[in-house]
Image (cartoon, rainbow, N blue to C red; front, side, top):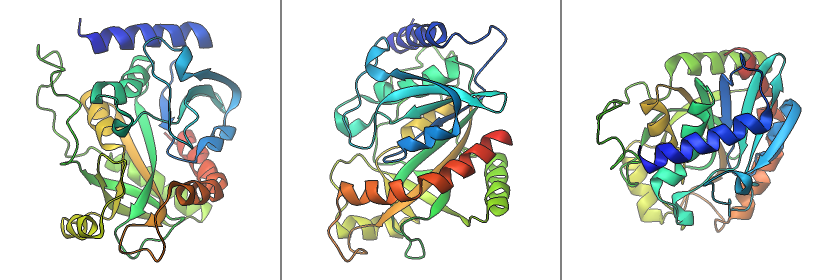
Length: 277
């Protein structure tokens, strides 16, 4: 057994015992929250919070705006898991650690994975506070999380990512947005390692590649989720304009401020979305 599989098995068994789900119950939909969106867990009833550090093999989250816990609860009669915070490559974790939460969610039964992030806008038609559905990604600048993982080919050795961000889920998201009066834009997300923000010249390069927003997460998680046959929906919350497009210096406090302001509308949107999955 690969070490990652052993960690996944023990962590998921611990969580199953801790939350005490009925045998017939499964967590069909899960959400990973980006920076500053931790209050979105208010959409759940009958909540149970389990900190990262209490889970076998799970490291502690070190980034402001990422409390670092699994939150289990319900929306209507549906069991939901929300990960309040995430692990990042720039924290010093290897990619198999970064994507361990996704493997655990798959082991818990998740079929639909909603991944949110805070992103800087490269597209000048986007503005802080916008929700943008991720149509596709560019991940050329990060190590692939499947390197060294599937040597025995128990799963596809060369998984394809044509529909990495499910068209079906994106259409459901657009319908939910329309019902709530929210404009749901679409764009291409580029994942970089961080933790430094991009230079103006790097921003110009990324724009020339066709990217609309940039961030320091999501791409590895989506690759692993697709490898595990999960349906993915990616949502970027635009928190700032990228370097060279902004009139002020970039800082993480700005990211958290904008994210905090939009928690209620994105919470309403995510509640309706989960009801329709």
